Image 1 (tube, helix red, strand yellow):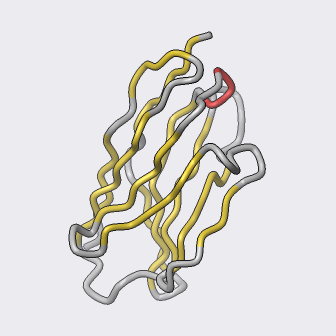
Image 2 (image 1 turned 180 degrees about the vertical axis):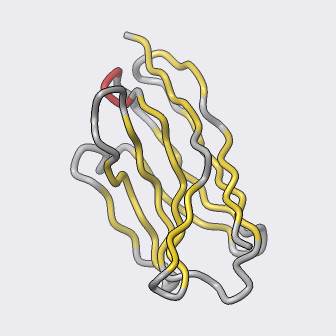
Length: 116
């Protein structure tokens, strides 16, 4: 059974940095894509960044140059380094994993709040 557990959220001032972590377990067959999504109050969940099993990465335009997604395969952990944070980055951030191209897993989310 795949489990994803996020951590690292919190309150930070605009211009500051946070690093989110997503500890994955149960993915014995590996994964196809892992990524980060976010959802602000009253808004739809949106993709922030993702990384493929081959190491390719992709970023939403609104985080390019500020956020970096990475994965430590030895630790089965996904990261999101967030720099130059803006108040509009305030949201619940969710880890996602696609396995065997058919199974979609989500973590419970971690809150990021950026004060102006």
